[in-house]
Length: 289
Image (cartoon, rainbow, N blue to C red; front, top):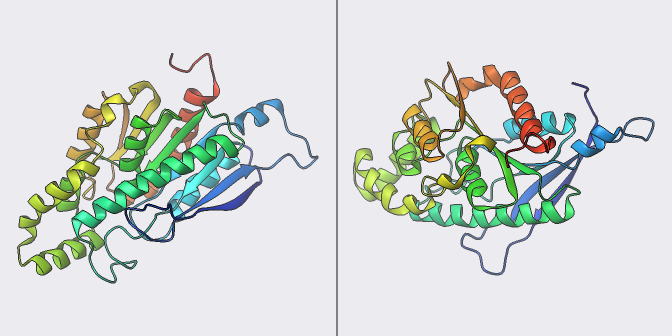
């Protein structure tokens, strides 16, 4: 694969007048492949640049993983819109600092984020220089959970790559073996005066409406690719299987690793993702009808 140059532009979506979870709007980054050094570009490369890919990130921390996928896809010739988070998901500040959010606040944040992403996709389709009928989506971890729901309900999205995601958000939050999530559960349990095990009904009540499981039955399994870890202790295999079953059993590549150790397989996952988007978005004669 040739290593194309590219440009990156910041696109900041300001707060809507009515907002479920006020913060600072949504920051996105538009990656465009550059023309060849002689100022020209091939017909094939120009056509590839009209294919748009939207990327949603992991739960917290930096954006290195989504940046890595964005750069790989733009170097392959795609135009990419990489979304950041609206706010921190579990705590009022990053890296487990600040107050733990109540589950009902996470639900409001999630619903607003879905509205933000829908607005970003519409802008991308109309102003991003892409074919509005050839937009795909790639999500990682929590980003995969949201991407599956967006792809299921937004007709702009024609293909989805879902990396280390699942279905059953309340259960994922209640069972994840992750430092920040365990810290969150401990802080929330202390505030409510209950054990961590007793948080499960609270998560179910507040977060079931946000979960993707009730939506993904409308996904086309021919244009959906899942990748998960066999030994994932964050999004446990049973939750990946729930997504796979609810989405009518799309192609599912299971790797011999955990959640964070999927990093070992990133070169392979990037290649799978590129190939899948080429197959589903670039070749009209091969796209499912």
